[in-house]
Structures are given as structure tokens and as C-alpha cells.
Length: 338
Ligand code: R5P
Image 1 (cartoon, rainbow, N blue to C red):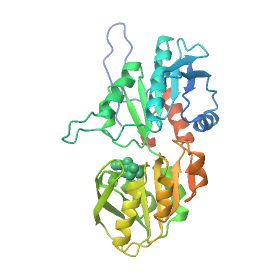
Image 2: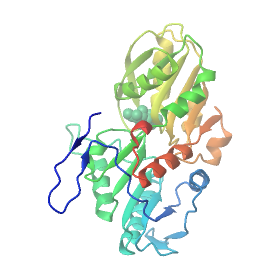
Image 3: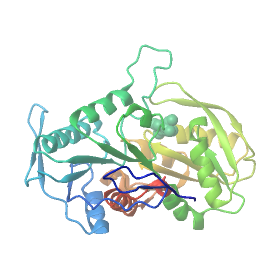
Image 4: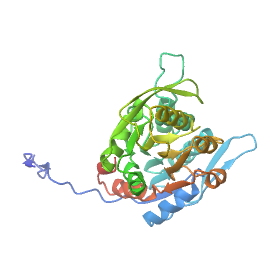
């Protein structure tokens, strides 16, 4: 790229426009985490080679939360790791409390790493008199003092527009595609369980060199969905259902029913970035004949989930988070982690 030099003003040195900029010297950084995912915190700590400092999040008998930092953060940049996974409200409130404690303790900048962002599905009113919880949560986070948000495969890209501060949405798709590669047959098809997941499906399809089919899903209620039509050829093919998250398992089960009705082969692999997997979800997946489940560790698996079938293969997002943090702190670009 051509570079241009701006004319020097009296008393100023010239500035090269377009030339590679020297990143600012890294700010001293402190790493903190809430209680939502201690295993991920340990894995990120290992991948970063930096210690997370101790903090205490106390929950009182009446359900109120109090965060206390066990070390000074004055003058430091702080990175807080906390997925807002179930119990969503408790983990969200904990994150807000930690951030508030950091801001009041004079941290210079607060970066929130929220690998799973709860409430992201609530991004519009859909013509009904509902709240837009994704927007409300973004407002609360900013108000608490978060200066930068990092998420992974967030449900809706609209979330970025809900924040005025920068938000980087990383993707775990290449990591999950690597885990899928040895498991998928050459005639397999990547299935988006709804139109909203088409972009995600295209990314998997590109990485794995497979075609895409899309289910036309309608949500009947929080636990019930219906698939009326499938776009794309699934006849006789093994299916790989991909999604950003699995919560009740209802979407996957209904897609599988529709896929089999359309002549897809009975065996199916399911992969999703976020294993929300509320109680009962694994039972549904197993009863529907899901053979393999591949997820990330953005949300910890419960002991019940870990011991049930289909056995979940867990891919860690810790190296992805560590790379993003390293680049962010050194003024580098996160673009290729999207
Ligand atoms: C919805 O659009 C999401 O991408 C997921 O498909 C959905 O939230 C999964 O939820 P469940 O497992 O409860 O059907």
C-alpha cells in the first residue's frame, strides 16, 4: 500500500499515513474471573502464562451478590473472564459486580471476555410487547464500566450494534471443524437448523468442503420448534447439524425428525459452540439418535451431561481466548480470529 506523509506543522514531527504503526507499549494487566467456568479460567491461565488474581464473589442467603478484589488493580488494565451461562442472571450479576469493583478501584481499562453471552437471542421485539434483553444487558455492562467486550460465536451479530464500546466476536468454527474433519463422511451435508444459522453453516461447509442444507424452523415456544421445510439435498446423506448453541435440544431433535423424513441417513453428528444443555437436553438428544456431540468448553458441562450419551467431545476455546487477549493487549488485530 502506498504511504503518504502529512505535511509537518511547526513544532510537530511528520506523520506517515498508511505506514505500519508501532503498537503502544502494553499496559500492565491484571486477569480476573468470575465463578462461571473455573476450568476454562485455568486453561486460559495456562495458555496465557499469566496468573489470574484472586477475587471473591459472595452470594448472600437472600441471593444478593458482592464482589471483592483481593489485590489492587489501581492503574492496571483488567481482563475479566466470565461466560454468562446458566444460572444466567447470577453469572451476569457477578460479572457486573466484579467490573464495578474494578472501576471503583481505579482500573484504567476493563475488558470483559464473555465466551457465552446469555440473552443474545433476545435481539428484537418481533412485533410483540417484549423486552429486548440483549440490548438491556449491553447497556448494563457498559454502565458498569466495561470498555471492550470479547465474545465467541454470539447468537446474533446485532449485539455489536447494541454496544457503543468495541466488541469483538471471535469464532470457534475452525476449532470445531478440525474436530469434525476425521468424523465426517465425504457425502455428508452440513445442516443449518434455521435460516439464522446459514452463515455459520457456510463457514463449516467451506472449511470441510461439504454442501449445505437449511431447515426452515419456526419457534412455537421456549421448548418447542417446528421444521416444515428443508432447502438443499439431504437424501441418503449423513448430516452434520451445526448451531451456535444447544439449550433444550428441541431444535436438534426437530431437525433430525425433518431430515429423516426427507430421506437423510439416520446417523447424525451435532456440533455447537455453546453447550448450554439444560437438564433433560442430553436425554432428548440421545433418544433422537444423536451419535456424536462436539462442543466447546465455553460453558462447563455438568457431571450429569458428562456421564450421559451421546458422549460429548469438548474442544477448548482457551487458546483462542489467549491469542485474542495477547493481540488486544499488544495493539494487534483480532480480525483473523473472527
Ligand atoms: C436459535 O436460533 C439458536 O441458534 C438455537 O438453535 C437454539 O437456541 C437452540 O435452543 P434449543 O436447543 O432449546 O432448541
